[in-house]
Length: 184
Picture (cartoon, one colour):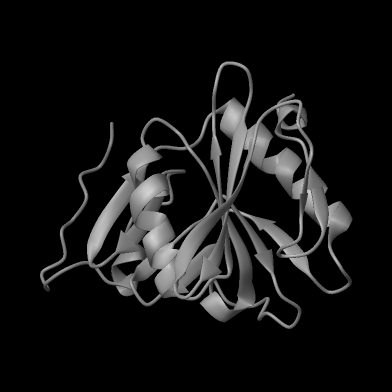
């Protein structure tokens, strides 16, 4: 039986409130004082994320790191992208990464996250200055990748990659991506 969430007595949710929430596999994120709750991802979602991590790690320059579900503290709140690429020198001891440490944030859409991944997350990542944002849509024929780069404070769409098509990304570093290979 799920335990009810205790609403904070102060106005809006803050990072300290996250420590009071259960460690139950559910993703709790804060954006502009609102709590966003997402159920644990399913097999296909995890498979895509982990395969993407493998590809990104294989291409990563020395001292760059790729992390799955790593927390990031943004001016708008605390979020947990599905995949992040971290720049050299990031603090390994903190729970919440600084936006300056993140070169790429990736979100893999699920039924419950689609609106956040298409509208809210790109906006707050751009406001935080994260240079690259990728969104993976799940389709019956396989994942589709939408890649965005920060230009004058907003994300510009730079690529749409379908299964069976290889794309050479230049940011955060050169890497060849073929979304059809991400589902096992």
